[in-house]
Length: 203
Image 1: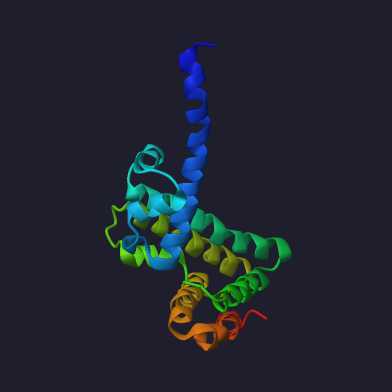
Image 2 (image 1 turned 90 degrees about the horizontal axis):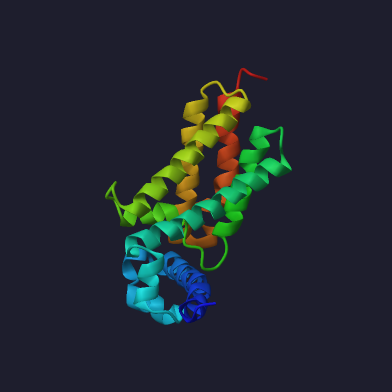
């Protein structure tokens, strides 16, 4: 093996580890403190990395934010997948199970709402990489809720889906204002009432 290849091998092997540490550290800081408030210097210092290693893995801080939000999207979507697995043929039960899980998360210490919602507010520019990830995720959620409301035979599935989406986004925000004793605790009852109101005449 050429000497140059021998020298290059450890650096190549170490690069993914540095990138993973940077992303993990940034994700924790971005969620807790807000992406705009956290600087690159703090991220690399806490990750035990360097700025060059950050910029080799991520084109810019904005792209690091986008990578963080991709992780947030996958995490958030897993709750819909869990609800579907638990209630495969019952759209209403899936929605209520998701709301139950959301209310449970919102009651825990350190909960900062939805990272994607927070980022969309922090970065309103439609061209920002993080904003794009947030919009894509929220549209996916909206489409999924429409599929579920159609599946349950709601009279106006799009309106019901949007009402449920407003409720979900309300949980994300009010949980940060009022804590576990706030309006988020009433989310399941509100969701059930919305669904029942749109199902009248179908039973």
